[in-house]
Length: 441
Ligand code: HAM
Image: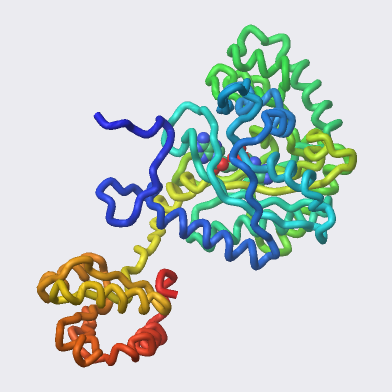
């Protein structure tokens, strides 16, 4: 058997591929990226790209030592003579804040809105919607603690998923308080769980030691039973005055804008850098356990990465593969990409080069393909239809002699003679007549 791709990775394939799935369709990823770009850039976001591998410290200090991501899921990068000081990024936020600090982006007008898309890597148990290389669209706002920014950030997420055609989505909104609130909550959980430590799974016990809040996020059924039995109070009950007032203001803005959400009093999130506002986006069709998107405020992250000054921040990221599963469940149809506007073919060998020249000129205006070999007219039309071309230009010796093209509209069958020098004007006219497909613009 020929060499296979690694487990938990996917190839993104062109339309028409025999093994095409919705979440392996390159055109679908393109559609998501471009829709997100449109919505986010209209709100003032600018694109940033950071390396897909970072100093391991960026992730360990950013995402946090007690998280599954750092403890179990990091892909270490080794190369000759190196001892594994780099890792493939499991998420984008820590790298974006690292780039903000390193490149003096503080000097840009605040709040600074950044967005990014690209692959992320987590060595997880592979299941539907859970991959080892997956792709995120990530949005971050740096330089403001204003609850208005929190509300705008959540509202933009809703705008993006609506623009993608999703319907059955729910924002689950909570707050995980300030660090001192979290300490108080962890102390409460420690007291509550310690007498029952022998009922916790190994994972639950490790969580009790490192960061009791993580127990609530655990997957072991026994742990979840214990949580239910003990009637654990939610994090929201432990918010201090500052975090509570902030949360109320975020809610007031969302209510005023009619952005729907459910309060999730026990939201935990799987990364350590969060403070105050935190949320997830869920979809009924994808299952309750897996969020489409997660986000929150992370005002302490810059200092964790070594900044003297605090840089408040907030953002979210969604996994494109999970979003595609949700779009499938909602019956969203992503249009097939358009075929070429023009397909040029020569009827005899001597004119193949001339046909190529005509096609390359036509590309100044629209997507154009040409036949690499001379063909009989019937074969040309069959081939053009397979490629979903709209017009075919045939070039035989008569056409070359008269410096014209015989252009056929494949949909109507109508045939016209176009002087070669008028071809660009002819194509522009056709584009003006029909809505311009992206590929032909
Ligand atoms: P996260 O909740 O770890 O947050 O991941 C965000 C989204 O990435 C998830 O909701 C899911 O759609 C997708 N995702 C995560 N792991 C996988 C996987 N193994 N396979 C497929 N999809 C996955 C973050 O990454 C934060 N950086 C979000 C953020 C940005 N917070 C503030 N700014």
